[in-house]
Length: 138
Length: 148
Image 1 (cartoon, rainbow over the protein chains, first blue to last red):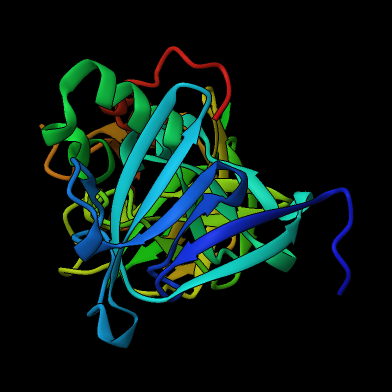
Image 2: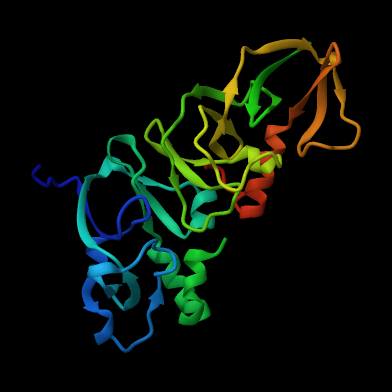
């Protein structure tokens, strides 16, 4: 299927139903975890399963001056969906999950999109060591 | 004045909820678990093109097992903060009974059950769904939002 102007592309980490997505436009680079020495938010506890042959990576995300590094494991892939399949989460879920949207092609819930704005706010206000709580707090 | 009550089955117990908030009774809906979610709010379903929180009412009432199973029916309910989906094991035909037949529950042995219906000795608690949903939003800190 050809990509159209209304389509949105995501970088997907892991395999559904435990996969997480990040808007592809926010991804600056992807590094092997072994080659990264900075401070990264560890998302691996949120991603089920082993890294397997896909290994671990650090996603360098950013827009303007904001930059965020996410440590992830598992398969990386791209997913393009129509905008109508990208559903905003209601506040009740957004608050408790650390996710911003649900990807639901053909109306079937597939995976969540990380709330990068919330992660960036947490980074600014609390320091990187507590960033994981923004995603994993229950 | 009559109360219109929907009987719902959770595990092996029947409960009643007022029909006012109930928008639809669906079959088993596919839902996506939220990583590390609170037990009472384990996931999300899609209803009419929007993401809707799945509320494990069985867990809230203290009758659920350790995990949220797929249940045969899904109630779609609306409330002040928006829409929610409640998985239940079964739902029966709506009962219309005079309000006077609903009596106050002594204490609140079943969470959110402040009234009950006694039908020839068979007592069924009436769940205050509005209070239950409002409490969930208050805990989540979203009770001032106008839209779910």
